[in-house]
Length: 296
Image (tube, rainbow, N blue to C red; front, top):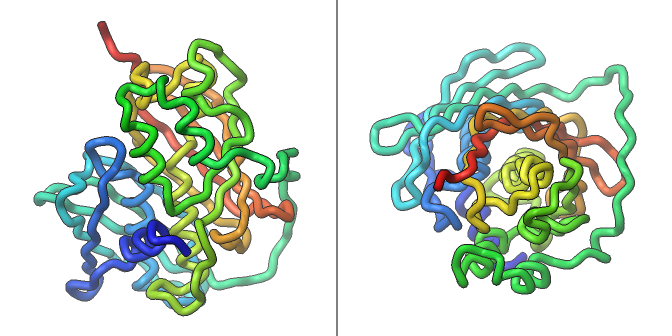
């Protein structure tokens, strides 16, 4: 486990300041706001700490309301909406400077047997055959808005080993492609079973964190845009939904298969499926984001 992963785990281990009220810190981001995946993961940790450990999350639905200030703590208030025999529901509001910046509803379920089927895992190369971010980003640093962007991106993602199957949007600027993208990812090191956040909640929260990193890439690919780091679009996440179908381990390779079925009205939709390396469909993700072309 590297220092960046330890730092991320510390970030997720929220301070309890009152019953059902938690406080979290932020770390520097590559943009002047809190990374959306961090807020979503912290909110899910807060909800999960009010639920029995044998009820992992099976879904979440969230809205990003205001940009988060990375220099200020975030207070998470959990409402215990329902505790049923099989399902538990929680609502979380994240507040900064007296205003809500994010809100999340999450549902948790005890394990049970039922009907089973799934879509097959799409083909993808072995992740160890693909370039790492440390190999990829410096090669294309001249495409970015500022000389330090590649370094800042590497620092922001240092806890996660994330590898693109095909070239990312910033490499193919001006060349529209099919609006599909794949990445493999895992944490940079093995996770402890006896950490501050119990597993499987920890694994699910880490996957929630990563799920916001690349989901809107497919929108950019469809229009030959490079992204905020290149400066040819501006954007932000609007809402985020996830369904957790089967067990997963965030410290083992996961394939994130993504597509963008539509973009319009300054918004774009991203859909993703996360598979374990042995082909199990573990998570479904949908996100809408603001995607605007700068004027002038």
